[in-house]
Each structure stands twice: as structure tokens, then as C-alpha cells.
Length: 349
Image (cartoon, rainbow, N blue to C red; front, side, top):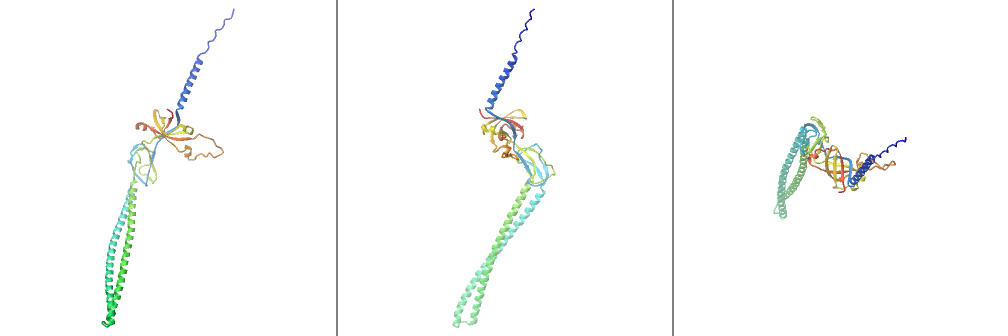
């Protein structure tokens, strides 16, 4: 018997179809990626940033009251912490007392100047009176000098007139010296008054400083925002310059995207940006490029790299780019500084 021929196997057409679909899908994906990256610049090295204001004690003292809760919202100018201010009130009272004493000294100095000025006026009148007497005595002396020659008056009378003239001249010189001394005393008193006025100004400055120090015992919110990193308790002694807590400012959030230096060619201010937040995958935000850092991130590090070495390895550097977020207050309230985001800059329409 002849052997029966085995039926021919049908070629497997599924595999080529699958491979064809995969190839076509790959081509379509590649084309889409090419078109996408021809218009977009992406990076996942980005995060939400914001202005964080540290609240610092400007004077030392014990914490008397705390009027906020950590992670709570506060308004600019709101009283947040009150320090024990009794020491500063005492210092203010001391400064006020010293100011009053200095002001009283000014009053005494002014009274002395008035009295001395009156004495100088009296001394001037004495000079004028002495001058008049001296003039009369000189005239009498001249007249008696002529009379004594012809014997109209005795030598004794002439000697008396001469003596009167000498006394008048001496009295006039003494009056002049007293007047000069009075004028010098007035000048000295006025100089002393100027010194006293300077002391009053200094005491006023001490009062103003004491008042300022007293106001620092009431710590106000420097900005509106959410408090964080609270590290004080009632009764705690704080020092001047100590950071008490921080405030994340409202409406200060932005994106810091660290683009590779090779990606900066087509980046410009004002370009539109698509933003995806890792914490909220369904939240699609819009933004725009705001400005560029003046140096790479490595240059601002604690130990910037020094490429002037024998073992140089070229590494692509990254430049921080600030991106402004365009969103409403409700959406912005969901964001927190430090959250990771993906950004895509549209540099071609």
C-alpha cells in the first residue's frame, strides 16, 4: 500500500500580525514622542517652593502667653507671643525719670542765665555811671589845674580834685572788669545749657529705646500664612535672635525646576508650563516661566566642585528655573513647599 501523504501545515499568520501591530504602534509612539519633545521641555527634578518667614525674638525674656497653634493660619500683625515685660517696664520708668531730671536741669540753667543776664545789665549800668563820674572828675581836674596856677584855689583843693579823679578812673576800670566777668559768666552758662540740652536729647533717646524694647515683648506675625516648626512653650526663656517658629506665607508658592544646562537653549521667560503634582495625580496646573537662577545649583552648594583637578569628569549641570503657578486660592491651599512635581515647558505652539 502506498503511504498516505501528511497534510501540509498552515503557516502561522498570527505572529506576523502581532509583530506588525507592535511595529506600527512603536512607530506611532515614536512619532508622537518626536512631535511632543519637539515642542516641550520636561523635567521631573522639580518641587514646590515658597517664602518661609522665620519669627525671631528681638529681646530676651520668659514666654508669658502663646496665642496660636502650630500649623494654624495667622494674619499679618496678629499677636502671636507675649513675653514677660515687667523688666522692660521698669527700664522705661527709669529712662523717664532720668529724662525728667535732665529737663529740670534745663529749667535751672535757663533761670541762671536770666539772673546772670540781669547782673550783666546792672554791671553795664555801673560802667556807664562810673564813666560819667570819671568824665566829671577829669573836667574838674583840668579846671582846678588852671586855677591853682594863678592862686585862685589852694594846693589842698587841687590835690583833693586830683584824688577824686584817680578814684573815678579806678572805679571805672573796676566796673568794666565786673561787666566783662558778667558777660563771660553768661557765655559759660549758655554753654552749660547746651550741654544740658544734649543730655536731655540723650535721655529722650533712652526713653525711645526703652519704649521700643518694650514693644518687642509683643511678637506679631510678620506675614499672613501658616505657622510651622513651633519650638517654644509657656515659661520658656528665649534669647534675642532666637528663632521661635516659621510662617509659610500665603500666595508665595512657586515651582523650582532644575533643568539640565543642555535644555536651556529654548527656555525663555513667559513660556507656558504644564504642571503635574505627584501628591494629586488628577490635578493639572498651569504656569509660566518667571526667571532663571544666576548660577547652577552646584555653585550654591556648601562645597562647590572644583574642576581644576587631574581627575575631571564632565557632569551635566542643572540650573534652577522659577515657575509661577496660575491657580485659584483653593488649589494653591493644597500645595505645600517641598512637594515633588513634573513640569513641561511649551516652547513651540
